[in-house]
Image 1 (tube, chains in turn purple, yellow):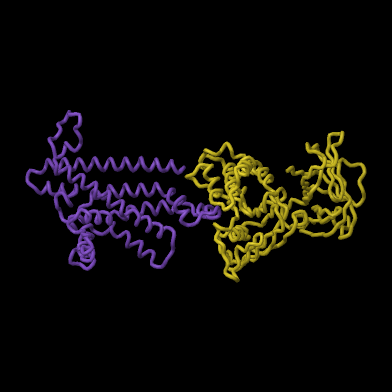
Image 2 (cartoon, helix red, strand yellow):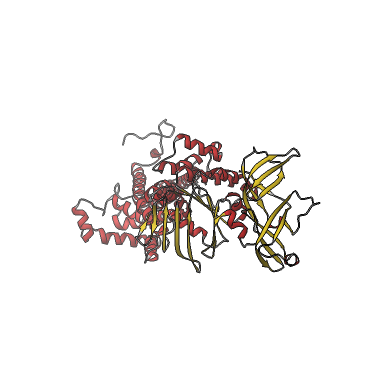
Length: 243
Length: 349
């Protein structure tokens, strides 16, 4: 990184208020959360469709299982992931042979975050799907629309506010994930040390109070931005679909 | 030619109805709430799969449970207008209208498209969202959307039930203009709508067909409270100098308030059962303009009142009098008498 800009310079930017380590933690957090939320979204959508539209035996069991990450301590999730995906576990070993490694890698952090924030997405999308009048689908059917056509042109646009709201909530929650990440992929600077882990490390090291305070402020700012964006996106999509 | 036969368990009884529709026109599916009308229409549309049944439209088998034939709703080409319009809220009126049109195997051409917009008065609504439409406008858009999918049969499931009287009056003329374009099955529990729109009627009661036939034949026989009485076709015969209009019908002539229609114009006349007085001798000094000779065909006592079915030429009429009057006049099938018409309602198409 080159010489840092000083306050008052033209290209003084937020990142210049942080040390390189802090900036790294911030960017890593954003990357991990973005990947976590976007990878979990298709699964959340599929699960929400299943739960909102279908009846099948064992539905409440599956419903409960999908909401487990909400109530289990994140450390437990992290530990279970470690047990399942560690290089010596059968599944983890098989994945490692194919060049996919989650432990001690930022992808593992994303996996843990995606799993823990999955219920937020599932719940928001499911509520949005359930709010859609089933009569609209029948009308579309009598007008010649098949199942995929109806999903693409009716269900998806009508559920969009819920999908967006769920994704933003999950993103915000994912930025704060600590227990599962530190348990599963440890606290490696530049690889798995996201914002909360950096705050934790700063507090642990002597004289790190100022850094911890800066990072905490950064977290608060991110949370506020997230809430504002969610509100904006919700209003935008709602007006776009005429509600 | 449309054949419909359905058996399906329904709210404590079995819907068991079979009927045919021979030609383009409006067939009213009439009955009280919970008589199975909507179930029947949903089965025709393909939204509901009945336990047993056979549906054939213009030689195409849409459903035959014996052979296991079930054409899915999206391939049936039965345009459906639902009571609650069911417009897509995230699309403009124009895109709602194009939804079925785009997916139709034989989409209406530009001219036909413009004509339907014109018939339904939709041009000014195209850019609007459904949320910004009035109830009547929503109904018109739903009608247009169904029609533009070029269906071979139009199903209307109480399209006016959610509207107030003023909105109904606004939509009825549009529906009248669509008559004759294609066969329509019109579900309703309003005899008023039947009288105004229907050519044929199928009366459903607790899942069974209680009566069916031409509306002119069935309506006067219909044993329901608030029966509209008789309805029959007539043509404008002459415009009289005294400002009245003379109508001709099969059974005689009627003089009515001036109608601004050319001679030969076909229309519908309604005679309410309570608006007919009966006299055994031809009354002479009387204020009523219309006195029609008729024969009693059937007497139906209903408590203190009696319903008298009459034949006036080949036109069926119905009068409601008190039971004591019926006894005093010794009315019985075959009695010749005079029907004094107090007022006439004319439906102008």
